[in-house]
Length: 190
Image (cartoon, rainbow, N blue to C red; front, top):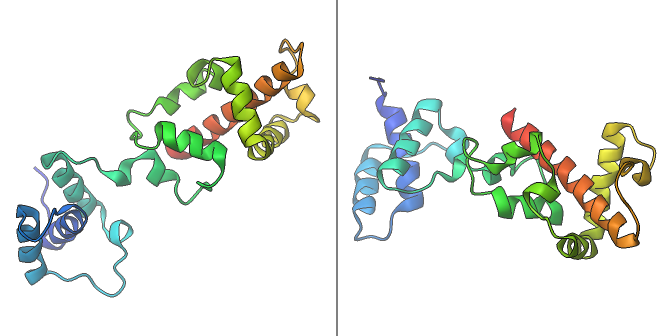
């Protein structure tokens, strides 16, 4: 059995109930009031980032007990400081996988497969995605070219069947989003 020091217990409990009480007449608010009478965060307190590992475990235990998901373990939170959520390509992944935790995220499949097979299998959807997000997508395609040592976007799609401009657009979506998915996976695993 793990020994928990009182300060860590108070810090984890305080943060949980500050974020999750449902009003002044709720049980959670009563717990928060009892904790607040004995513990007040210091001037350098910065929420989750201020908690030590034990306090974070206390917070997670409250999440489990109260059947609340721990937002601090989600892919969205883990990537919040790393990627621009305003980027429509990143936003696509955050919408699809953002509420997943590292243990159960579908992003793990990106180490074996690609965007077309995992997320968007219809050519019309790929073309619509390209048309809506062309600027950001092409930035990711260019990053993929640079990372893989290709000199052009066409070289990146070498081996793909390209008969029309739509095939080229669909191939670019697959290449750029697969690269981004693998980048995201690598960061959350690190």
